[in-house]
Length: 358
Image (cartoon, rainbow, N blue to C red; front, side):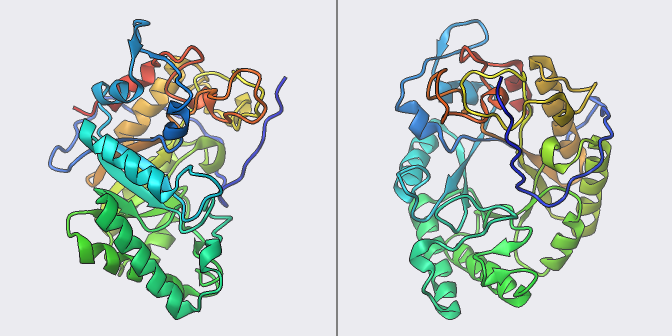
């Protein structure tokens, strides 16, 4: 049986209270709604020629499935100089162009790193490590200007899960708070200098202490509060989540989005790579078991929470594409196949119905 890897990408773990929320929600249609998925690995997976199926078992194109189920925005990770082409500028630009032709909006997440950035890790890109602070600021401006001119995203983040800062050690909130704000402002100036239409997201992992963070950046010229919410890392109470999101909405008056979330449809596995979620204790029970219906109800209730807010605009499901792409015998494949939006036969799961926000 698989061992489960516990990857702690965030500093705050909440209580284990579980609950349901009302489904009788009237959405505010005055805001542009976002129904998004992060499928940053899809260009790599597409090269392996996997076949996907709709809910009736008929072959369907993966991207077409997302589109007809209501997904309107694709979120893509961008690394500066990755070890291979995955999440490189070339790959992200080419994939963005393909997605735009299909009618999707584009949400770019620059990590300002050659690898993963999150609250516990904000590593300078190797090519930027010898820069002075002033030169780094200029590089941030140049880099984001280049992204804006070449990719023209509809949404863009300044870093990924920046609870602790960006571009360490220069943008460490605890030790270099003024520089953190300067770097954020430098990025925003670059974005606004190219487009007044692209919306800027500041992304925080979790909802506890989010009020502190967004109060700290309240004078910054950004558009959207972006929150990651995974029960395994950020607590099992949707009531607490709703309360904290409501406070963010009331305190700051900005649009709010769930920038990352996911939930398993099973605790089984489809390859020999350790999965991140694989135990009952990591779930919100009894309300949301690891079943197709449990996964769907989790997203349904989360969607209702965010869209019931005065400023709530939607959500993004992370890892929608992460099937067991390397085969059932791989020990270096997917850590997320039990949280994808397609089952172990690559068939659409019921949760996809929740991406239609109309």
